[in-house]
Image (cartoon, helix red, strand yellow):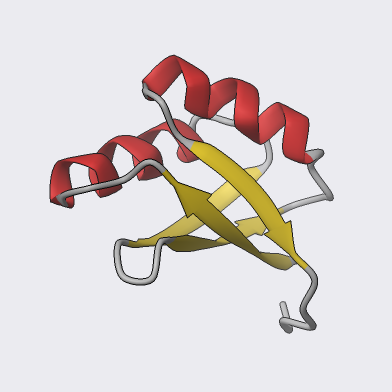
Length: 75
């Protein structure tokens, strides 16, 4: 399944790399497409993952925040 998220706190390509690396460390995340402008991500996962779990991982990587965008992305 794919879900779309809004991100805040990124300012450069290094931030994009940090966020992507952090998201890929979350169990059941198989792919993370992270974009700087606009700040966001499309995350492919094996099962639904709570936003709180993603946020916890991002806090370890820096001062980033994540919010789910309700959308209908196909798997």
